[in-house]
Amino acid sequence: MIRIGEFSKLSNISIRMLRHYDELELLVPSQIDDMSGYRYYSANQLEIANKIQRLKELGFSLTIIKEIIYEEDTSGIEHFFDVRKRELEEELSRIKLQNSLLEEAMGIVKEKADIMKYHVSYKKMQPLKIASIRKIVDNFYEESTLWSELYEKLAQQNVKIPADATALAIYHDEEYKDKDVDIEVCITLKDLQEDKDGVTFYTLPEYEVASTTYHGSYEQMPLVTQATAKWIETNGHELSGKMLNIFYVSPAQDKNEENWITEACFEIRKERGGQTDA
Image (cartoon, rainbow, N blue to C red; front, side, top):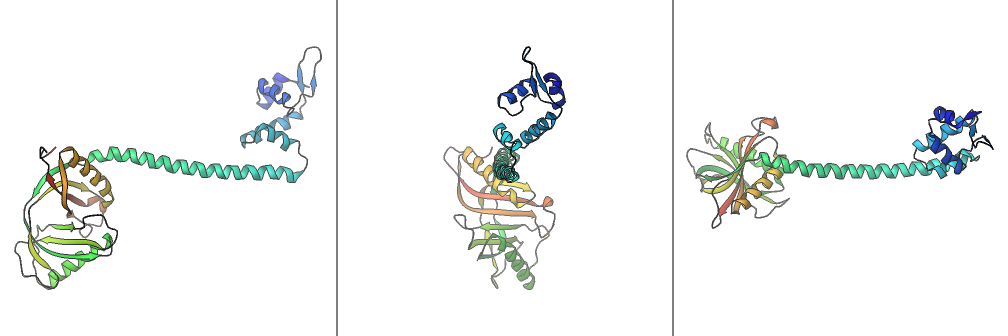
């Protein structure tokens, strides 16, 4: 026979827990000395002790463990395991949901940190001579087709594009639209010509804008607009019209998005008492 202290070492179960198992009649000592009250276990009971530990690791309660260990019907045991499997699947779904919510929360925190890297400033855009095509297209992804059309028609008309020309897009809608979007694509020129074949030549007027130049993917635009809105509010300005993108390095020039350089401009007007820059 094995005394409780030695059995505790062999089974990796504390003496306190062995006594608790005895009270639950989960693991009852083989013998208890009437005089001393010492508990003794048999070597065979180590098998039961090991089963208890394994089932606890699987998340079963002691009540269920007792039923499993002393259940002689195999189908009854399988039922307990099926139930536990469903519980684990549900728990896994909850954990995945919590993880998703955690990542979302971390993203919000990161955005608050990332927004600080965007420098917004006041800028007065000087008048620009441009050639442009303006159309209502299905969605924002169709902007690329407008650029292709503009460059193709300028080539057909033998319009010389200066080496230092600037490409810009103007978004004319007063509100966000996910379809039927009013977009104008423009390229700066030295001299204007007569309108022809859908291409309009004119001088873009002076604009006062909140300007942010950023490098990389256009997926940064939500953070850019967030930083811009904060700057406008802080400096006593308000939005007053169009949103423009000036493309210094675009996908047409470099396929690597890390090299793209874009200036996002939001037309503003200064409220009374507002500052000019921050």
